[in-house]
Length: 416
Image 1 (cartoon, helix red, strand yellow):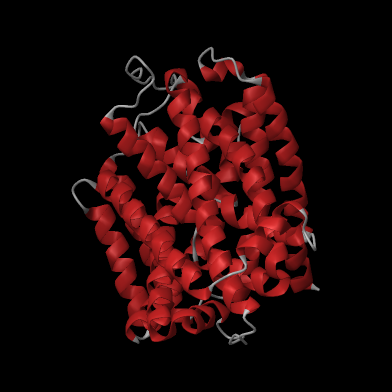
Image 2: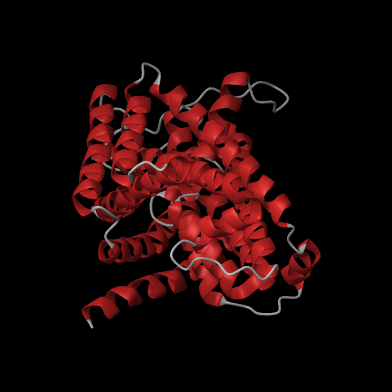
């Protein structure tokens, strides 16, 4: 990772008059927001949503609503600071305090490597549910698909398109299951404003799962690499950040409703795989196959997002060749796939450690970017940062501190 202090922030072409995005910019923003959204919608996302829906029932709707609001507040700031400055998060970290960017990159890559083992494992479980294929074989084949995407001649376009297509497929298929399961929508809506139960742990877990670790930077770094940067593109950056969280929220809501309909109907779910069991109860054999497709799509897009973003933290936009960057991404996927094949499953202890790293990185990274917006406006090309957005960002940052404490606790329990 190079130190960026000796180079100016890259400039970007101003958008056309009238504020409308060009076709190329629209495609770039769409790809960036779906990369962020699909990075968040991984195997853990599906497991968390199912577990809390079973535990809290309709009351989980309140936790989802609050987490979406917090996520939007944080993503608005992350995308705007990174996008307007034209610098990656770790580069800004090194400019705020020498070496801080290295710390951010180290924590993120360690967490990304371990969680990618879980993503590969999830893709294997997805192929098992779809075709009855051995999870190790399915995981290896899925990793080859991801590697093929990055080795393609127009890798950037390929990444953008596959995350959009698979993201939409996940939402549509899960919506089908939600309609089939017949959830009590009225009860869920009532719990958004008048919750029967408030679970703080559920809220913090959702925030960490949606924007923890590499996820919060995935879309912003993709947008940056596509050249949509600078104060002239603030409107595009804002649209992308908010829409990305909304896409994630829509997926969370339809998955919640799909599971809620089954649970409210009194069905007993298989404790070994509650999500798959719920899909099967809702739509029989077809439901199980649909679950396989959703899990595979969630996993493979998370493999792509984790690999792309982790490598972006240890490379330079200006000094690293496309070939080197591609080889690093391929190596990242290969190493995590080999780890999965040797272990046969995602190692639980390492996943707990990775969760702690992600929880620690979130407040550090957010604080760096908010500090730039508050005190280092010289890095924003003369852009006047909205005060209301700063206030919202710092308030949301306090929530990330609580998340960090909760992410460290499981590690202490391991040593205990």
